[in-house]
Length: 342
Image (cartoon, rainbow, N blue to C red; front, side):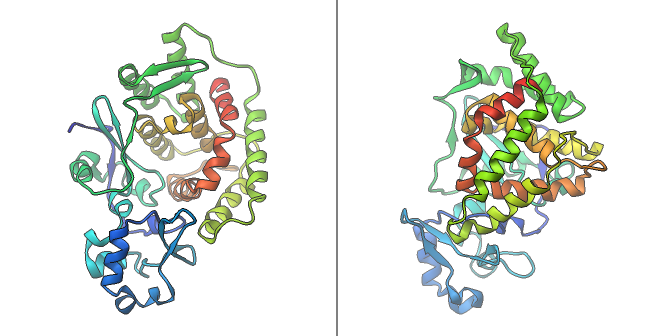
């Protein structure tokens, strides 16, 4: 099967252990749980003696968290299961991480997830995504690979295109982002390109700061009200509130050139991976990226790559927790407005 990836997309594991922190660790396959029980994991990994797995209300298995990290994370940031029983004993999502796959007309698009804590260290010097892609396709998994083959890709209000038509447009948009000096202007360039193709003028006059603050304050209030969540979401909630509380109220997008380069690869990866399709369409999905660009930017001085990388990964790990992802999705109209006024 053909693998589609960014030509300059690279990644290498730095053993930072962040993939084992802040997430909800499941659903875990039944055979993985059974295998660990048969191996008497409590006897060979003592931290698991206090319990290492729990069932959700939906009957799915999840590994327990200990102080915000997976119960199987060792002090050296490596995986106890991998070390004691081998890679095949781990859940499918651990073995696939940090890659995200989506089926599309050209084959399978593969990108690196920006919630990987070490991605920023190797995005320009690591192994190419193509080096790992074929092995990913053969991994067993209980959740199907996302597919856009039968989906209509929303590119504007009341305007959608087929997946086949989308992949004809996508290379142009990726190049627009790559050529842009920063993400704010990259979004402007994407919108302008879509407008040229459709013969529309979609730009709105609402002040960007007004919409940004509406999202910032609204999302923060919604998450503050979610005080009775399961324990596995506690760390993610704390992280979300931390970022939303300390965010600049003046969206300026201050970054060093190296940090801008990283943002460019991240945004192009999201477009290639069609992440916006799960967020209501191109306007709202790109609007979310634009919101994050300003949320995480520097205040008194430009944000460096070393500051952006850990912040973006921590924010994204928290954001992907289902309760908070649903909160963000409820603001799709506002994120779309950010896109249209950029």
